[in-house]
Length: 320
Image (cartoon, rainbow, N blue to C red; front, side, top):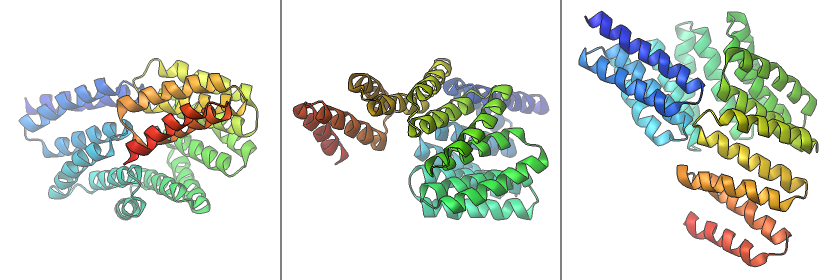
């Protein structure tokens, strides 16, 4: 009976992973909560640790790092108690990512390096590559682009060696982002094109959206606004079938930026205001302040300074 219940819990976890990939995160959380109840009822500690980690990962994808940390820390305690080093490394990595999302980069690197050390100790190549990928993202956030690219290349070689196409796609996408940000636009577009094919073949909708946003930003930096708009609108079309508000915000803000650079202020305001409405629903003060500033600057540019003061004044008061 217990093995049957454990199997049901594992299946619910697998379903949740598919739902997360297709952007149905609330349904994924429901599936994981059912699985958590089952593994706790049958006192399956290993399963409980895995499910707690997966719940944390979904909250992390929803832009809720503090809530994610609560689940990750519960999972970490269980993994250590039962000496499951594979899962310990996974959860340590996720904790590092959560701290990175909170802007606590040094703390993020501490946890990520612990995860990397364990992954190498137990010869878990896949975990090693994933951790290197996340370390690269932290260095990118710290402005250490060269170090980030080196770690990404190391991760890519490992993924290629072990035949992990999904990992290859994600790393190629990040390499594209970094090349775009440092002005290597053609290299960036080459990486994005390779990664997009992989995301589409695997049905990873959120990966595809992130890829299209990176592609759009690159075309925008090149001044090729029509191509940028095509990529952003393709992303929006995909997002209609998901509940990922953070990517929708990024897409609306991206569209606002393109129209702003293309000297179409009313269109820019339309998309910035859609982004602002979503941000206020999900609660992201940093993103809200950036969007409000963008709106304020457009009002100043079209000679409506009073509206600019209202928008930016709201930001100033809200940030206190």
